[in-house]
Length: 220
View 1 (cartoon, rainbow, N blue to C red):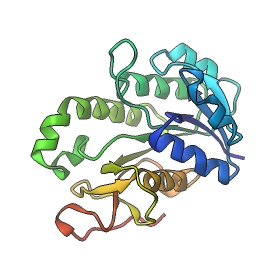
View 2 (cartoon, rainbow, N blue to C red; view 1 turned 180 degrees about the vertical axis):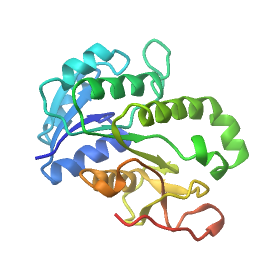
View 3 (tube, rainbow, N blue to C red; view 1 turned 90 degrees about the vertical axis):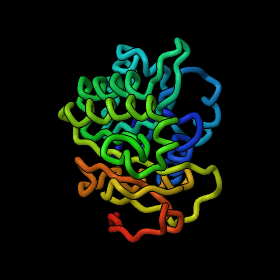
View 4 (cartoon, helix red, strand yellow; view 1 turned 30 degrees about the vertical axis):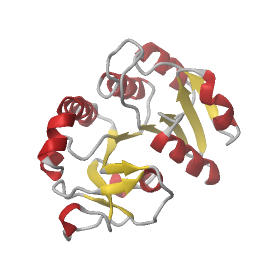
């Protein structure tokens, strides 16, 4: 039985993941900083643990003794102290995963990060440069951690219903748009999928690719 530890479950892609895992009856532990989203997650039969991704000791406490197989992190943004969690929070999650014997870590970053820097318009790269550098540091830390990893870089995000057109590609030059619900579906298909191990993917809607380019799709 797979046990998933989900950071970022309160909203966006993270909550979409929580809903899918609930439907699939996969045992899921959600990390929350505060109780605002506790009731809606528990209504999905998801266990809630409290802790701040900016505090590694709290993460170890939340993960320890839970027999977690897979950590999924969708966290990002600015902490209450004004520090971005894109690197520091993810670094702490990665280190806590190492310290508690987690097998697989799925990290969600963004197209434009690292080797995909040329896949987004120059104006977007300039505007998001500082954030993307933090995400790249998190990717690097994960790759060097010794954990089995999967890195997924979604394109521009929309909050509309799933289209079922979301795909993964290993081509870092591909950019485009994708709905959050479709990203979540792709992430969930990576759980327990050995073929995605130690791989970095871009995630786009195949009908909304910049430049209408052809590319190789990774079949899940």
